[in-house]
Amino acid sequence: MEYTIQMVAKLSGVGVHTIRAWEKRYQAIIPARDMSGHRVYSKLDLEKLMLLNKACHLGFSISKIANLNINELKNKLQEMGVESLESNLDVPKPENNRYVEVQQSMTIILMALKAYKLDIVSKELFKLKLFLNSRDFAMTVVLPMMSELGKAVERGEYSVSHEHSLSAILKFHMGHYIYNTELKKVDNQPIEYLIAGIEGDYHEFGVMIVSMLCKYYGKNSYYLGPNMPVDSMIDAAKALGVSKIIIGAVTVDLNFGVKFAEAYIEKLFKGVDESVEIVLGGNINIATSKIYQKRFNYFKTIEEFEKFIRA
Image (cartoon, rainbow, N blue to C red; front, side):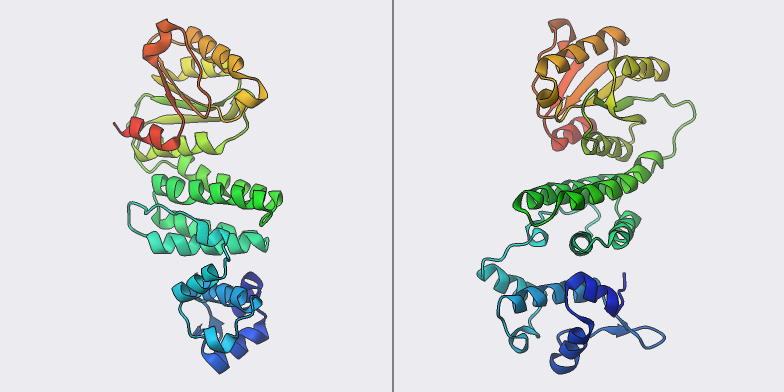
């Protein structure tokens, strides 16, 4: 994506006139030009301007740091004890080896989010979707970014409104993977997985990621959403003839207690066909009756579920 000088000024915090001065005097950034001769800036240009701005605020002279590359600027900031959400992001390498581009896009997303430039956030996510499959988008973008953003909110670097804004945009883009399957469905192919969040649990990212993994690994699945009453789960399972039900339970133990989750699972087992397996995901360890143990799996992490589904 190419950015105008007005866009990089707003995102980096460096004024338009300052950017032009840094270009002319120190060649800190050398932008390309479009067909009309206007400056256009790349992701790397934007990232460098952001780092230069941080360094200047710490007292560095622009003349001394203008010609440093991005890694050298990051090292100088780290030497000064400056950590940022962008530098803390632990981005796993996607399977298609577009690691650098993913890192750059996520840096832009977080800078744009800080400035409430939500249109840029959405555009960057759209670009990532062009070359990332459902698994890579979930595991290399959604999981690390939401995890680090949550920590940044706790530190006071971002606000809850930032977190909610990004959540809403991410869910929109994740829905494209869930409802536009990458694999051609075979006519009359049965639905294998039914996926939903347990009643009283409104955390949706886990079950959405599970649904995206099912799509990637060719599992025909049906996503119902969060906060699903047990009777509705039973009705859907019978109507669709599923062989496995995946239940996400992130905060239900805090809201209702472990006993509620156990009763939910027990009722679900009794209401569906005796061949149906149930998979529970979340940080909650429940006990089921012995008669159901062979049909029950429990995973604390998305990574554990991925191993299960691809086995």
